[in-house]
Image (cartoon, one colour):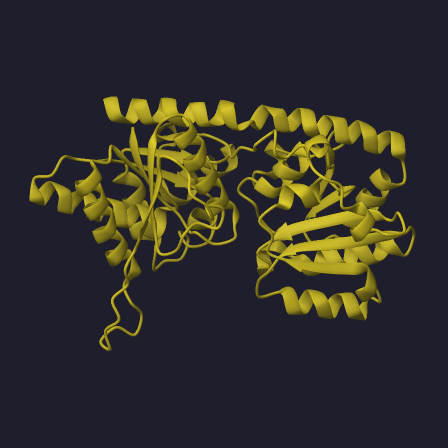
Length: 376
């Protein structure tokens, strides 16, 4: 198959999943064409069967905000016509699925071969953007105009039905996935000597540091843990709340024990050093970073929201706590870190749970779904 993929190429779960999906599909012999405004974050090198098409944005004084969605539609139509795409896979309903069906209309008007549209819903396109009255009608229409729709969790499928009134039978749940070989504690070099030079416990968090990720809760919970045992916190990523997180660390008196490492390409190496992963988000459609941590045998303490319970089983491979309950977050972490037997049980269970989301199995489900869409 010839598959076009459009995603946000920046640091974030949907872009990571879309890029990794494209790479896995290329390894299976499919021809993959990424169509977006920048090269995807996890595509920094040449890969056979993978092509990148940059969306050109015109700069006209008339446009205060250049219409990216229209430029994207033109790029999709041009790529589909030139290389003969079978499918355009849009990750996010708005604007990507919107642009895809505009591109299909242009293809049909020109008499070019048709292209099928598959849209994957990742979370904020439904739980945040889609609920905005300004975007709700176009989000719903973009989903309905797709030939196939997938959601990354049962939670997200239920939310799509509830918010948009779309029959859940039209939505296929295909979860996010993880490379079990790369995200494997035994296959990665150990950096504990540099990250925790005095043998402290290592706690980690990865996100784009937006308010919904509640990074300050991570820092405050860590401060409670650090008051009771030697520990260090490694924060991976960047975003608008980084400054507030740094200020929180200083006010809590743990500034010297919190390391901000910024955006990292090889997070598997860092996660393989961790003793605990914290994910206190207000909402998560799935929680890909939690899955990556679990694949490295790292127990996860997270909030009991969205699709997280479909990945993290409370009391088995981690702990689930209420949103905003910093005390519960810290106590759950201490419960695991202070009991080596309990930690090893949770670590083993975390890896076993992650194996249900291996790339081989999940990507095969995408392939089968593509075939169903093409034959419909």
